[in-house]
Image (cartoon, rainbow, N blue to C red):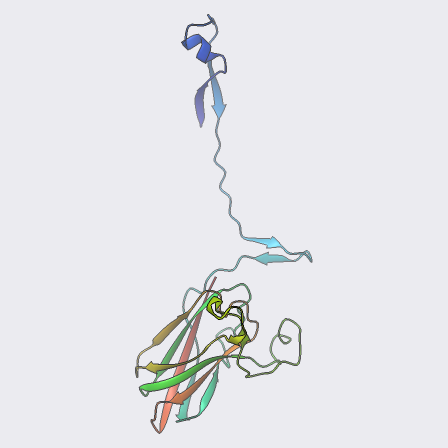
Length: 198
């Protein structure tokens, strides 16, 4: 595309200050070049693609016949064959729980097992199944606290979806959730699913 523009001296010509016999229009060529940022080369020279949020929930597992007062660790298997959740590069996560019995369920973010993915960023051993702690809430003045330890009233036979945001569980390398059946029912089936958000 070519656009017309005025030469620097043309304003003086228009105002009548000087007389200019030549054409005061000049052609300027404009080109639009699309650019797509698909990743970067890290400090070790390895190409790293940009992460995007999970498009759909990854249904990880169904735990059957969980007695009242007993807990499950999830995910223990993911659709891509890896577990637990690797939140490297992700800031938020949606957690979905579908119980067969309504009632109270405790939900805690815990450290996953070290035998997956080389530990936590290369560190082993780790304290598997321990509640994750950090200074995730500015209101506590930076004091260490459980990053997620809550009890929720869940509705039976539907997905109960919770959005854990503000980077509270962001970049956790070995993330699992401990879900305890406190519904009062004799047993419950618990299905879980996860969606990571950049």
